[in-house]
Image 1 (cartoon, rainbow, N blue to C red):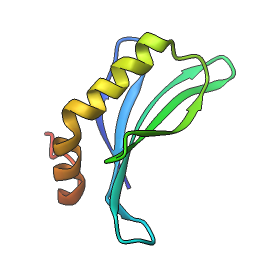
Image 2: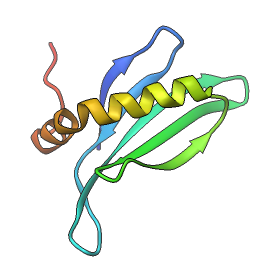
Image 3: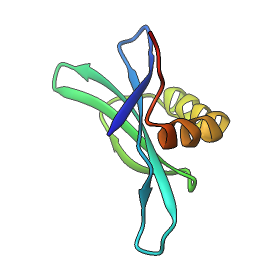
Length: 91
């Protein structure tokens, strides 16, 4: 399950996943940034809590990628909290 948390002016959508568990029992979530382009999508996926980039495809600039990483780092507790609660309840 994924939960949308942002829509940016350039068409990028930010979503976060539900909580998953690795074989070692460690919990994780993925934060995905994606926008349509003429060839499909620009995609950037960050796994928390490791902050590893697990997928990078398309034409996001280094500045955009740095901004996405800051969003992941600044919002990590928010993303985990709402992933456990089943997403954001927005009217």
